[in-house]
Amino acid sequence: MRSSVRISIGIFIAVNLSIIGSFNFIAYCQADDAEPEIELVPEPWVHETHEYNVSGEVDGTPTDEFFVNEKWSIEVRHGDVMTLIMARNITQDSIPAVDYTNNIHYYVEGKLYIAQFMIMELVFKIGSYDIHAPLNTCSDFALEYSPILYDGTVPTFDCNITYEGIQVYSVDSIPIGSSVSTVDLTLVHHIRGDWNNTHIKIEALLDFSNTRFFNPGDNNNEFVAGEPFTAEIGYMMMLANPEDFRTIGPVIPSCYTNTTLEYNMTLDDGIPLTVSKLDMRDSFTIYNGSGALDSTGYSSMDVYGGQAHVTHGFPNLTYKDT
Image (cartoon, rainbow, N blue to C red; front, side, top):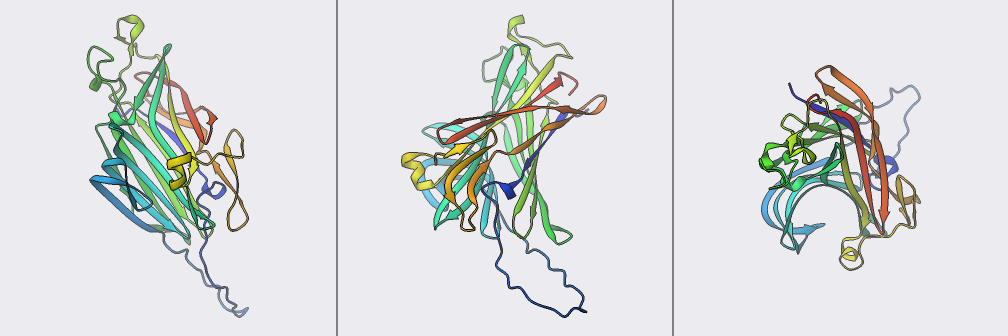
C-alpha cells in the first residue's frame, strides 16, 4: 500500500505581490439584440527548460556567483508578469545544494523586483527528536506539466515537481546507513490565468513508503509502529532587486504581520507592494490503512531583516500507518 499524506497549499497570488497582471485590450460596443460574444482569456506563454552544467544567471544575465549542475524549470508569462518555478541542483562557494524555488518577477518604475519563495528541507518530529532532511540528499528530481485546457473562458494547466529519495538521515548519522530511510516530495501546481491575475494553488504530497525512523535513545533501534510524528515544511520568502541583493541584500519591509511583508513601494496601478506567505491551509488529509482522515496543522512566520522564515507543521501522523 502506498503510504502518504496530502497537504493542501494555496498560493492566492491575486492578493500577493506577484501575480497581479493585466492585458491591454480595447473595449467595444454592440447592439442590444446581438448575442454576447464570449471572449477567451489568452493562453499563458509556457516554456520548459532542462539543462546541466551551465553558469548561473539572474534574469537572463550570466553570473559566476553559482554554478548550475542541473536545473529543471517552467516559465509562465501571463499579462505583464513572469513566474519561474524550478528545481535546482547548484554549487555556490563550493557547497552543493538542491532547492525548490518559485520566483515572481515584477517591474516597479522600470526596476526589476523578484518575490522569491524557497524550500530547502523537510523536518520530522518523532519522540523528542527533530530530524532535518535537506532536499540536497534527494536521488533525483523531475518536472512535468499538462497541456493547457480551458475551464470556461479561463486557461488552466498543472505542473508537478517531484523530489525522489530524500534521505531522512544524513550520512553516518545512523549505523545502518543513510539510504535506508527516504521520503518523496511532490509539489503539484494548479495554475489558472484569468484576465487580471494568475492564481496558483499548490498541493504537497509526502510519500512515506520507504521511510523508517530510529530512536537514538534506544541504541538506534527503530521506533515501534504506531508512534505519532509530525512533518514540517519550511521555506524562506523575500523581495529583492537582483543587483541590489549582491551588495545590500533583500528589500527590508516597512512592517509585517504574521502572514505578510509590507513595503514602502507602490505598483503602477496604485496598489501597495506586499509579499504574503504561501497560504498553506491548516487542514490536510492523511491517507492510511483506514482510508482518508482529515486533520489540522499549524503555521508560524519569523522575520529576520529582509527575510521571512515560514514553517507549516502537520501533526498526528502515525508511523507505519501514514
